Every structure is written in structure tokens, then in C-alpha cells.
Length: 458
Image (cartoon, rainbow, N blue to C red; front, side, top):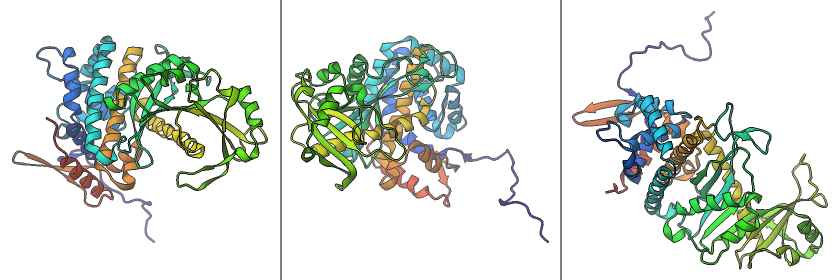
């Protein structure tokens, strides 16, 4: 009778290995930084905050933290992952130096934020040009989703307060450019707010939209080709009027609260006026219909606004609300897009749910917790999170194809970034030899070839 040793082979572990690089797949992010010119742009933006004869460049320090966050870190000290691999990531500052820099940048206030955001906008325009047909603006329209995020705090932090969901923390307002069904999305605004900030505060939505538009190429900062999409938090008179203001001419698709006036108007819609809702492939959506409202519901709103309502059978177990009727769940949104079928407009607005995917990815990339105490420092952390998310969006857009372009950060880390490799130094060259048996080695090497074919900035 053979002695059982378990389901897995027993291996001997020794701690004196050499020539091995962990997280070697993160070289994809390093190459994305190089080809996008993000390193030079951030370094140039932070020149005013660099002391003479400083050993570490503030831009490199900030990018190192962003790379660590993109690889799964959730605090400043996680930059130690990069410090352990100088052959791939170069010299990395100490934890104390990183902490001092974050404090200095936080003290710089709006000047620092403006410099970082301007640099990101310039790099974003360059990356979209490199992406060509896969860029978000390739179809002639850009969609920006604005949505609030609740970030819990488990200790006393500046501006942490009780939220509308009876939790405790902060309530940032985020904005993401939608890459459509063939991609993911990238952040264009992250505005830190106290936990008790309102969900439908018009002033905050206007400021978030201003910041989001500033991240887009200049030709997209006004005009119908840019669509601002929100949930019912954006359905206020002030915000809609700001979007439709003469000279701005933005397109919008904002959710609306079902008021008593809207509810009564829905009850008067004849059966013949309801149109079946559609799915992305053009098929009929089972149990869902849409109709357009007019009359008194549009009084006081900007000219050209269309009010579209959807009724749908709720999923099993869902509890109806007072504003629902005849066993149907009612939702409503407003848009100023003319000449389109209401079913097409409703599908476009329903696809705002992709913003929830972007928020889930952000939570997995440093937004699960704001690790610092001061609000100004946490705003810098929020900018770092956005840089990390930019890299996680730009790398697939520039280098990955097929289903790999749709992988979220957790899957990218598990399949690509976590791969180990052998480091070989020959002459003046350093070569990473990836494991041939790893299932996704081909994805990594193909992506690196795609990045290598791109022109180097400057």
C-alpha cells in the first residue's frame, strides 16, 4: 500500500534564487508608459515641485505608485513591489520619500491637480491618435458617463461622513469615457466629495462635467458629438440647462425621477403608442416597451428635450415601487438627440450600466479605500488611481485584441501581470525570458510586439 502524499506534488522551497523576476508581465504597463509619453508628461508637469539636486524625479515617483496600484496595490507602501525589481522598473524611491512627495503635492492644492490633469489630457489625445480605429472617438461620437461612488472609511478621515446608504465614508463623483462593446473605459474625472454629498447636486455634476470635457481633445469639448450620460442624479433643471446652453450644444441622456406628473402622463399613454424595447443585436427585448411623453411634463425644461419612459416586467422577487404601475417597473430619461427612434435612444441610455463595470474596476484598482487621512492627500490618491486606470485602459486599446481587450483589471493581473520570467543579462542588453508553458505567454509577446511597432514620442 502506497503512502498518500496529498493532491499536489511536494516541492522543496529555498529562498536564495537569482535571475528571476516576479510580476514580469507588468512590463506591458511599462511599455505603455513609454509609448504614450506619460512619463515625460508627468515629469514635466511636476517640475515646479522638484527641488534642486533631488535624486528621485517626482514624476517617476508618482508613476511608480500608479503602476503599483495598477498591479493591485492599495496603499503607498505597495510601491515596494516595484522596488524589488529594479531591472524592470528602475530605481524606486523609499516609502518615506514617497510619503513626503504626496504631502508636498497635497499642499500644492489646485495648481498640482491642474498640472496633472493637463498632462493626462495631452497624453490621452496622443494615445487616441495611436489607437486609430480602436479609439473611443473613432465612430465620431464620445460618450462620458458621470456617476457617484461610495467609498467606505473604517477610521476617522477628513470629510468622511454618513452617506445616504447609512454607511460612513466619502462620495466621489467619477466620470468614464465609454469604449463601447469592444472595449472597456477610461476615467476622465475623479472629484472627491464628503460622504454626505448629495446624489443629485447640480453644481457638482456641472463641475465634474467641466473636468471631464477638459480631458477630451479640444474638438470634442463642445458639440453634439459628445454625449453626457448620467443616472437620475443628473436629472435636475440646472444641470440639463447647463448641458443645453447655447455655444455648448452638448448631447445628453440623463435619468429622470418618476414624479407624480410623469406617472400620471404614463397612465394616459395609449397602448398603440408603446414600442417594444430592443437589445444590442437588434432583437426585441422581452417584456419591455418604451414611449415618448410630451405636454406638461416638458414645461420648464430646455427646448428640444425629449422625455422617454420605459415599462418592463420586474425580475422575479423584485419589489415594485409606488411610482410603478400595472405590475410594470417604470424608468425615465431625458435626451436632446433628435431624429432617432425612441427604442434606439432607450438602448443607448440603458448601456449606461457599463459605468458600473468601470466603477467595479476602479474599486479593484485603489478605490476600495482612501488610505490617507487628509482630504487633499486623498484627492492626490484619486488622481493616482485615475492614472492607473488610464494605463489599464490604454494598454489593451493599443496592444490587445479579441476577448483580451475586454479583460478587467483582476483578470489582467492574474493572467498577464503576475507572470514570472528569467532575467538574462548579455552585453548591454537585459532580456526577460517568459515561461513557454504559461497559457498566456503568446498574448504577452504579441502585445509587446504591437507596442514596439508604435512610434516613440519625441
